Structures are given as C-alpha cells and as structure tokens.
Image (cartoon, rainbow, N blue to C red; front, side):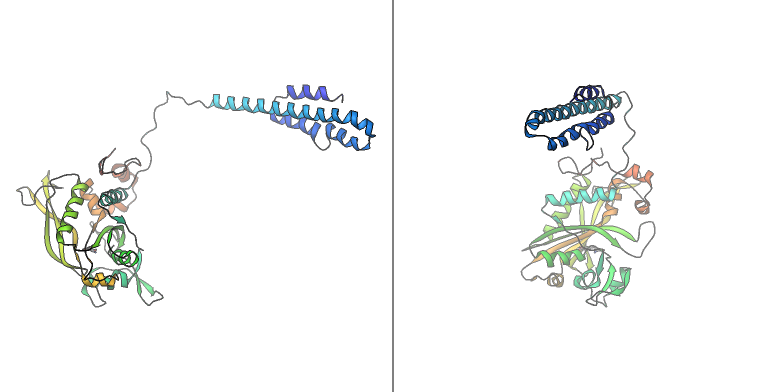
Length: 362
Ligand code: DAH
C-alpha cells in the first residue's frame, strides 16, 4: 500500500481536471493499482484477506474522496475565473433601438380582438383555400349570381371530393357559415384574416385583410348593429366624436343591407376620422359593409330563421390601419421594407389593452 501516500499527494497537487482524471485511471482504472490489489484478494488465504481487505477498501475510499474533492475545487475555481472574466461592463452604452417590429396589420388585428372581446365576441377562423359553396352559394350567391363575377376570384384548376370548385377566399364572410354550422346559436364572433382577389393598384393588392363580425341571437335588430359598430369605432379610433351614417345598400348575404360611413374632418388636407361629416370642413367616408343576416344565410348555417336573427359586418383591416396610423400606400404594407417597418411597426411590448389604450405607441 506504499502507493497510497504518493497518490494522495499527487491528487492534492493536480492543477487541471485532466490531471485528476489521469490519476483516477492510474489508481481506480481497470489496470490501476487499487484495482490490481482488489483482484489479488481472491488468491489470499482467509486470514490474510481479513487483515488486508479492509486496508485496500479504505485506500480505495481515501483515493475516491480525494479525487472528488480536488475535482470540485478545480471546477469551482474554473467557474469563478469565468464569471470574473465575463462581468458586464455597466458603463457601456445601451443598445440601439430594438430590432424587429410588429406589423401594423398584426397590431390592428390585436386591437380589434381586444375591443370585440370586451363586447363578448370570440375570434373565429376559416381556411384561406375555400370552396365555392362556403364562399358564395351559402352566402346567397348562387352560381349565376352577378356578385360572383365582381369578386375577381382566384380559382384552382381542380374540384374537391364533393365536386365543389376550390378558390382562394375572396372575403371573410364564409367564416359566418362555418361558425354557424360548427357552433350553432347564439353566436358572437369576429373573423380576421387574409383574403384574395385578382386586383392590383395603389389601393388594391391581390392579398389583403378583412375582419368579419357576426351576431346571431333572438330579437336582434338594426339598433344592436348600430350600437355595436359605434362602440367599436369609438374604441378603435380612441375618440368620442365618432358620427355614423347608415346608408341603404345591397349585399346578397344581408337584408336589409347598410353601408356605414364615418364622419371625418379635414386637417392639413388629410382626412382624420371624427366629427360630423356634415361640418364645413368635413365629409363622410365608407368604412364598413353590414346588415341583418339574410334568412337564407341563416338557413344555410343550419339554423331556423324564424327563431334566430342576427347582424353581420365586414371591413378591410389594412384600410383601418391606414386610417388610424396615417399610411397612404397600401402596397408598402406588403413590400417587407425594413425602413417602413421601423417607421410604422410596433414594439413587442405595445400590447393593446382597453385599460391601457388600444392604440398607444410606446
Ligand atoms: N363580404 C363583403 C366584402 O367583401 C363585406 C361585407 C359586407 C361583409 C356586408 C358583411 C356584410 O358581413 O354584412 O365586400
């Protein structure tokens, strides 16, 4: 056992983890001296074994303990050295503006979800690749309906398993049908999302965003519609002087249908939402399509129109964003230009809340 003292001394002097490991192998490894001694126990007489055995085991334990202790000491020294080398220099300047921003369309959709959630609306979704039954037929636009031609629809070459033509949805209105069929009544949903039309100029892009609203309940009338839209627009534009004008209109899926104008005021030649459109420096602009849900649409949604009534509305999210935040070219929304995003984007912490203000920029 003459190896024990020199081994313990070597372990205490080892100054790297690798050196400790080499010493472990030389003592406790398969060919190590402790292991060799342990193996020799087998060839000993019982008396010899009784006297030598415990000493060998004690040596093994002493070596194991010394190795563990040295390894711990070296590891914590290494950690301290690392921490000392990595201290943050608090005198360094703060980083420049944070990178990346939330797109105004995402921000406005979050604002809308927040405003409507407060009025008891849930968010519903539907597929962007839609069939013509949900997109048109069930919304009271049979195959021969002229409104179909007005939608500049992107069709797919193949039909689905049920023989329906497939298309990129031209509006979010098919989510009305999907929501009624899957959830029944009563119902209060909004459905924001992408829609597609073959159309492109300064105010039209082939892909844009809409938001749909649908309320189905008993005894619903136009007064509920007007109150809901007024409350929504006041919360969205964050001003009380929002004046609405409901104009008779036509949509196949509503009866009666109304187009909703909001009063604006001219400020430095720019239209700013608010004030009566009849004021000397004001006017009206259309912001929403809406109406009482057509009986046929309620039937296509699997509900009895004698029992259930409702109202619906739809509008462009991009347009709402432009009106609120002052951009004037829709195409820039989808160019992915970082300078535009840096200017019009929102910080990740600008989460819209009704209590904090749905449109406050940090
Ligand atoms: N779907 C219509 C469009 O894309 C917008 C619309 C009008 C939606 C009236 C509605 C509504 O829900 O009631 O132009």
